[in-house]
Length: 288
Length: 334
Image (cartoon, rainbow over all chains, first blue to last red; front, side, top):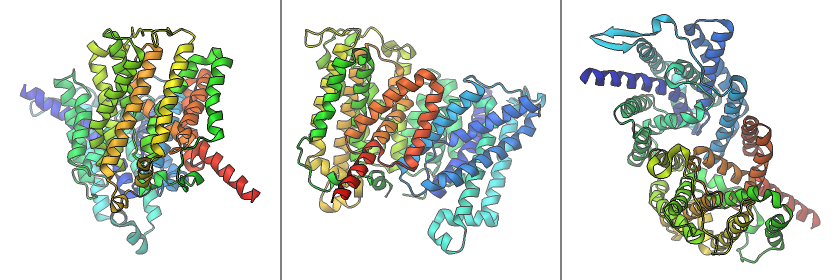
C-alpha cells in the first residue's frame, strides 16, 4: 500500500514536471506580456511532431531529437512572435483569446493534414525502458530520466533568471515595463527572446511527453486546461509558483485517476474552480 | 482596461444617441428573410432551424460579452444544461414543447445565477478560466452520469408531443423551423427591449468603464449577476430548442468547441449589436455546411485563419464593416 503510494507520488511528480516544462513558457508570456496565449499547447504539439518526424525520416536516436525539437519550436515561436503576437500585446484579452484559438485551430488542422488523426508511436531507446530499482522501489526508467532532466532545466532557468544580464532585464521588464524601457532595456527584444525560449521549452516538453501524454492533433485543446491551470494557480510569471502548481496538479491528477477512476477528470476541474476562487491571483501571484 | 477595450469598437452612431426602440425599415426586412426562406427553400429547413437555434445561442453570448463585456469560454455549459433539461423532461414522460422550453430556460438561468457569483468577482483571465472550468466540469458530469444522460451515446428517444397540440414535428423540419423562428423572434424582441432600456445602457457603461460606474451609483456586481443569469437562461432556451427539434442530446452540447465557435460567430458578425450575433451565426453555419462538406479538416483550418484575420484587421465584424461603410457614405453625401 505504502509502496504503491510512493509509486503514484513518483508518477505524479514525473507528470507534473512535464506540465511544468510546457507551462513555464506560458507563465512567462502571461506574466511578462500579459498575453493570454491559448495556442501554447500547439507549440508543445509541434515539438512532439518534430521529434517523431526526425526519428522516423532520418533515423536519429530519441535523445538527439530533443535539441532539434527545442530549436525548431523556438524558431517557430520567434517568427510568430515577431510577425503576429507582438501586434496584439496591447489588444484586449478577448482579441488575444480569439487570435490564439484561431492559431490553435489552424495547428490542429495542419497536424491532421500532415500526420493524420491518430496517436503517434514513439520508440524509446532501450536504456529508458523498463524499471529501475531505487531504494527498494521499482521506478519507471523513463520517468526517472524525465524528473532528472526537468530538475536540470529548472536549475538552469533559475540561474538564467537570477544571475545573468538577460535575467535581470527580464525581471525588470516583468516588474515594470515602462520603467525598464526607460532604463534603456530593449523590452521588445527581451519579449521576443523570452517567447522563443518559452516556445522551445514547450516543444521540448511536447517531445518528452509523447510517451506520457500521448500525441495526436487534438493535443493543444486536450491539455490547454492543464497548462492554463498550472499558470493561473501558480501565479503568472513566477517559476517557483509554476513548479509548485505543476507538481500539485500532476500528483493530484495521477492519484485521482488511480484511486477514484470513476470520478476521473472531475477532480481536476473542480479543484481548478475552487483554487481560483480561493486564490484569484495564484498561489504566488503578485498581481491583485 | 482590457474589458473596456473588448467592447470599445462600438463607435456606431446608434450608441451616441439615446435608444428609442423604434423599428428600422432594415430590421423589418431582415426578419422577412427567414419567413421567405420557409416558403422558398423547403429543402433547407433542417439547416435553417439549426441556424436559428445557434443564432439564439449567439444572442445570449452577445448579452454578456457584447453588452456587459464579460468574457466567457464556457457558455456552452448553459446551452447543455438547457438541452439536457428539455431532453430529460421528455424521456421522463412530459413531452409538451413549450412548457419544456420554459423549464429548460429556467433551470439554465438558475445554474447561471449560481455560477455568476464565481464569474463576476474576477478579472478577465480568472473569468476565462472559471467559465472554461465550469464548462468542462459539466461536460465531465454529463459524461459520468451515463445512467441518466446516456453518456457518450447521448440521450435519445426524445419524442415530442405535438406543438400546441396541433402540429407534429415532421422530418422535413417545417414545424421545427417555424417553432424555432417564433421562439427566436420573441426572445429577440424581449432582448432588444432590454438592451435599449436604462438597464441595457448601464451594461454598456460597465463595458466601457467598469471602474467609473460605481461612482455614478450603478451597482456593478448585481448588474453583472442579473445579465449573466438572463444570458444563461436564453442559452438554456436555445439548448432546449435543439434537444426538442433534433429529438436527441449529445455530449457535444457541453463541448469546448461549441463555446469557441460561438465566440467566433459573434466576432464574425460583430459583438454588441444583437444583429451581429444573428448574421454571424448564419454566415458561420452556412460556411460550415458548404466547406466542411468538402473536408472537415480544411474547414477548421480556414475558420482558424479567418479568426486570426478578423482579430488583426477587420474589427467589429460584418456589422462593424457595414456601419463604417454607411458612415462613410453619409459623410460623402454631406
